[in-house]
Length: 515
Image 1 (cartoon, rainbow, N blue to C red):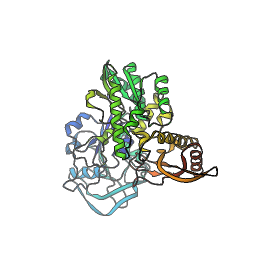
Image 2 (tube, helix red, strand yellow; image 1 turned 90 degrees about the vertical axis):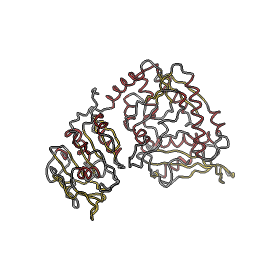
Image 3 (tube, rainbow, N blue to C red; image 1 turned 60 degrees about the vertical axis):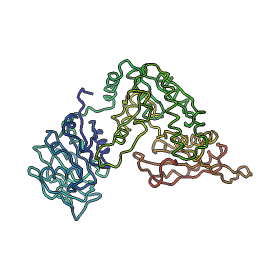
Image 4 (cartoon, rainbow, N blue to C red; image 1 turned 120 degrees about the vertical axis):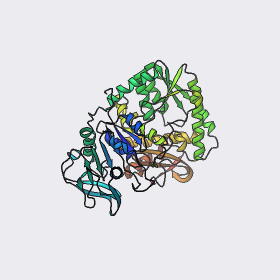
């Protein structure tokens, strides 16, 4: 990666697609950064973007309370592309007119090009696009012209060639605009002049230099969970600073079957990373005695983890930095942006949460990356697919997959059942094709018959969902034969279970985890 990182700034006006716009830009090997719509001109100039994209948004530009950016952005001398609300805002700021329209466009539309323009190279004279707007441009400012139309929108794409300002009424970032990638790439590469120097291998090289510069000769500790983010962060940091890194792996007794052994084998032996293993099973189980409420369980597990981690970290001499596997979506969702209209902001376990008394500076080598980029970095660093492609696992572990009280007996039963689920999903070639597949232990007993004898034992629920980001999810229609195999194996091989049921609930109204 060159010393100057080419960048496209995405100003977020509350669009549900802002992260998707940023992802599409990166697919063109160009770095993208999402910024609040009300960023100051001085701060935006300091970002030194090669181009700026104004996102869509739910507001109407003529509403007095609608989010507005500094009009000076259009005079910075860098190309600007407005998408949907972004196009309408450009029009309004430069003296054009925007108003509500009778024939609103939601869904598919056919775009007709009126003239050839570099923005649409490879797009085709006619192509499907995805519309989502109730307002439309009524009058263009001076210097603009229409270059594409739809049946209901005469200004579906506009341009001011001398200012290099573009506007499009549709969404090129969604899959429903099949050729939208041409528009994003043409804007980034041909209009903004980006060479495409954003790759995961170049990211690794740059990150190694940045970490070495930040850390110097000091020691770094990392809480290793065995999940994708912390594992990739550990491998990247080890490449950068070697023996200066110590990973702390806390076994809370609520891990998958064989997880503690797998993590120690991979990182302690294969990668030769300094690994401090703490088996705190008894402490965690004691903290969960007679705790049934899901939120109280999460808090008890979280509090105990902090205490155990703090004690382990205090034994590492000269530790000056705490490393975390924070990713870019974590950062976006966790930073409260004043006035940002987006409703997608939330707190995240990686952003804060460890005791302030540790007085350690943060190292977050993955904070610029989306999840799929993190996986690619892992591949480049030699991590196995078992780590890179593994499904999300809740921070509290199996504690929130055991409904009600958590006992050691229930943990062992669930570990065995869950292991069978994962094994059969992998055999069927479906494990890496679903977002999450797991077992849930229900504290219900039902009557059954096994070996001509009456049984009265517990129930396991199977849960399989597909999702893009975990915010929404659909239940997966697993093959009946596969569900039958999983059910038979669990009932035959796991003592204490005589019934298996399947969860057919999507999110919403349900959540992915049961607790």
